[in-house]
Amino acid sequence: MIAWLWLQQRPDTLVTAGLARASDQLSVGPDASNVAPSANNAPSAGKSGWDEAFASARGKQDARSLETLFKRANDCLLYARAKDRVDELLVDERWKNLSDISPERLQRLDTSSAKAIRVVQELGDYCRGSDPAQLAQASSDALFAAAMQGSAVAENCFFSMGPSAWGVPRTALEKQAEMERYLKYAPDFRQRSLERGDTLLVNRTLFEYTGTAMDASPMATLRKADPTLAWRSARLASLRALPDQRTSIEAQLERFRTLGLLSPSQIAAADSWAKDAYQRDYSGKPAQDIDSDAQCFASHELVPLD
Image (cartoon, rainbow, N blue to C red; front, side, top):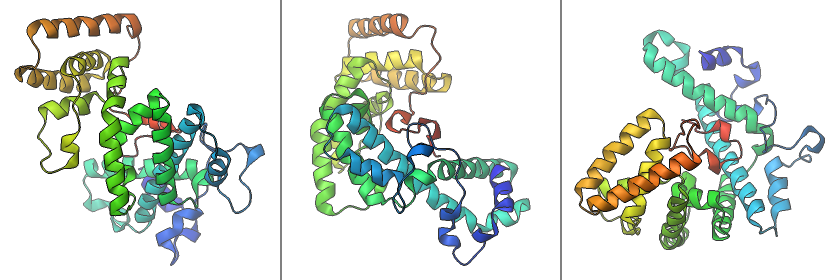
């Protein structure tokens, strides 16, 4: 009932004709780690922390600076999405009469709403007033540049986030250019990710072999991963994954097996590689959420929003 309690206790200033944009008036909590400026380095009057970070990043083309830039841009895009949800929450009639909502649905509503409120509170000082279109462009440019410099995180995020992340409106020419760039570079970024044993791209990689084809979509032309590399990476991911994710991966691997792309000896060799890699690098470590793209954000603890 976190969101419901917040609605009951919110400042009176939120209950005005300006409700549609009222979340701008939310009080904010402590700065998010590695994102918002410190108390001794607060944003200048009239500028957000993002504005100053973007200005100071100009001309910096080293991989680390580019990683920081795209992660912070993604934080503010997350903030923009959460802020829209909070704006909707403030005028949502469902919260006025909870008796008509089932406990299960109420729990889902409350969890989602509470997460959005937290994101707005924690990122508000840093991101308030930032422009989503500029953020999307900055994220896209910095992400690609960092990936081209060999940043493992950027390679993973470039592939997983897709050619036009965040759904920010683009012109037809911009969308075409982004798609062409993605189709050209994403397969190589993925190959290096799978060779490293990273897990973020495994489900997408398997689905390209075992899922339903995307007819007439340019993404259907994306070059698939090498079958052996796909299998061994998926097997390693299965060993590292959360229990429900492991079940899903194993089911996909069984479908993959029926395609006849790999011989029994190739599968055995790939399984052996995965087992050795797991014992060498990950044995005894906590299970990993292999679907989480938290590495693509500076405030990874706020991801996912849903």
